[in-house]
Image 1 (cartoon, rainbow, N blue to C red):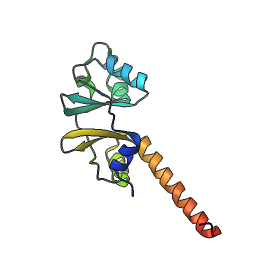
Image 2: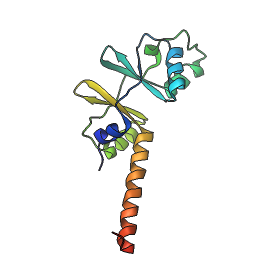
Image 3: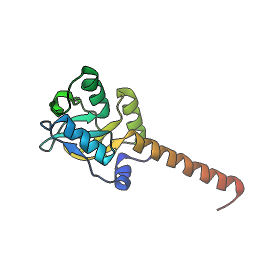
Length: 144
């Protein structure tokens, strides 16, 4: 089974982030410009939280607040679940399902080295299944 490290080698280690003091509007602009659903909130080099579109929808819009006046720290999810590079994609899927999250920062020690999304996991699992199917088809038809 492929590991988080394998996925990051293909996907890359770039992580979009924002500070807790930034406005929610600034965060939304980054997410829209980069077409991502979440940002890691960094306080210096330390992961302080995660800000997702879900946080915005539930904590700003539904409460009639303004994203230009609120800081990221006010709505970010402070309890961050994470993965380690050596963990498997099955571990990711289990954690995402259990914790009902769509993004997991990847930490090596205390250092942020990437982020895994539900889309990354699904894409890799589909590729793995397609590879297995092709191998079985070749076996059945006798193609080397």
